[in-house]
Length: 148
Ligand code: FES
Picture 1 (tube, rainbow, N blue to C red):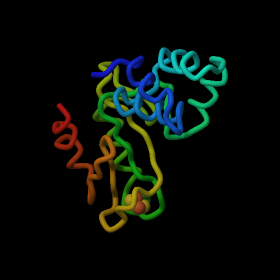
Picture 2: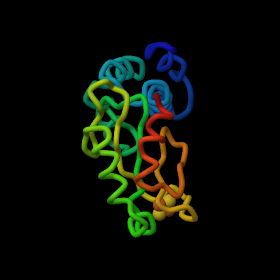
Picture 3: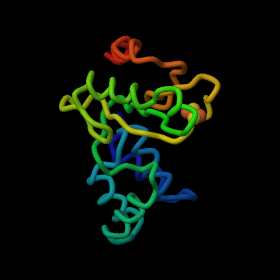
């Protein structure tokens, strides 16, 4: 795994600079550690407050620690009607966490998302951006087992 410093340094003179660097760090670490934001401030010559402001402005960037597997439940209307509520409750029960939380072992984070463009197979979840369609609560343990 590349270090945070190496990733950020590699975007120093590129267009998009700090935002692209944040994306790259998040791709590798699943979130933006505080250390990354502080280091980016130094590399891009802005204050720590400004670097933190950029990191928290975009909803797709997260400064909160997230798990190795990020499970997102689509909550847009078609998935909602198809049983998203029951599915999310099943994931919460299986993992022992609520939406927005990460398991104590750092393995799973549970989040909600808007439509991911797979409405032909509602309800839909994604795990690290990979869609799983036509989900039902009985499939949840098997899907989680795939991540072990
Ligand atoms: S509404 Fe859920 S994937 Fe489109």
